[in-house]
Length: 514
Ligand code: TNX
Image (cartoon, rainbow, N blue to C red; front, side):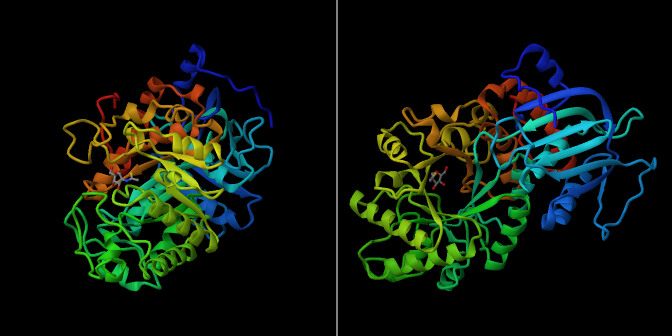
């Protein structure tokens, strides 16, 4: 495959040529050519994919068939062939090729996409990169118009992500969102090449996952939420189906049980988790920091062992999140014992622990990931020290990526404790500059988060996610010298056509000319 040197920054000619392509997140290397190929009738061929071939080809066909004027079929004999209007089909070849991607990149998610007179060829060392190539292709399609069919400009793309962890955390505890909603969230995350769905499954207001050794939790503590709704929880079958849907889009699920605070849903069920033996009242308000476990009660360790072991068994991914945030009513020594115990339980269950930043105040085991979030002014020496000692850090600065923050002061949804987060705030920041002194090589990635105390519906959730999730995705994927706010504004406006077409809610921020 012929590869040219990637340009290091936008120069004027490059920017002008980019006007024809609007990809989010901005790829590492894009070389526009002359001419177009018609894609009104696309035929997908998956080559060298073994077991992944039929569903990946099917998924590619369905992603592309959602576009105006495009019909995509694939070469699974079981598929119904749709005859092309003009009798001509353009081939989209998806092929595993270890040499694909930008020169020098070792990312397992790298890919190349070549569109020329011969058709469209996507290559990648692994299937994940092929789906990324398809998402890029989706954004390159020009809708039919003025007698021309749907088409794609000739182009060569070599692309790879900046960070291996590109996530979205969704709080299904404060407002419950079920399987169908979460599938839709996975689809939008995958559309912007995110690869982690972190689920905040438990909090004071609800226990949203079936825990087989503790069935009372979901039974007695999932019947309400902060929106006055009826709540709900994911059964293990739901969780299985969600993971399958996510896995086909190369999104891994990171489930979280938040301890030792944010735990009223459990103390409501088990009085023996309370020093006075009395179960707490159900809670559907939005205060934080009032509930806690007590380390020295006999019921505490068995409870933690049961719920973390159940969760580790249910999850396919390698990570389990133990929470650890906002434990406002506990001495540091007791808190450290909880962190140590939960890390151990998760490791014994065969998974790697992830925890919110506060856990780095306790001595961490090698391999535990910590998630930075709290942008209140504070001394972060403990986090920097943990990173220097080998902890990996996920960047979720609340004033940039908490997508439950209001866009503007008068915005009807969300909160504003971390400030207002307009689209540009979510876009224009550099992960290496957030925590002074944090070694750049300790950063594992970037994760947006959407807490749902003030987000009552799926439409509201999407309005908070879009367009900001696409901005955060570019921070996580794109090299800093390839980012450009004005160019992103232009590209996101084009992306909005797709949201409008599919009826996907988004917030038409005044910062973008839609
Ligand atoms: C802080 S972020 C929290 C959540 C709230 C959120 C609201 C974090 C680890 N804890 O419990 O829902 O703020 O924005």
